[in-house]
Image (cartoon, rainbow over all chains, first blue to last red; front, side):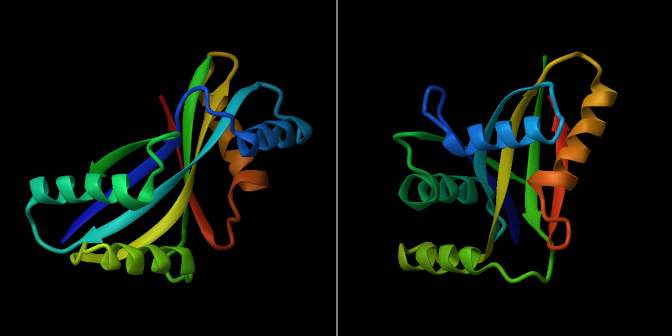
Length: 80
Length: 80
């Protein structure tokens, strides 16, 4: 069994209204030093098998097909 | 300026229908080896100042007050 974490974040330059809302909310709560906030997604997956190279290739295919919108999002795959 | 990443994940035992939907979708796309999928959130923040200890304390306070629901979610703070 292989445990993996996929982190999907918006590309630079893509507007992030959710992140802006978080910035404003933090500032309203008294946290003054927040320069920018951007929100992304994280996926924790468990894959059967022990072949790390195959797992990494599969995870990248999963990102390209389902987990990330590669037009506006970057993804990073970490295998534990 | 300090860059930080906050990762918020559901605690073990908390139902994750979104993760279940991702499992089924991946299986439908032909990825057979996916044992479990759980989705969480990631926040990329930029904080002013250079005091890493203060930044970490602030980030934990932000998580407790706004970014995470600590009844059902865990959070991890990483300072770059």
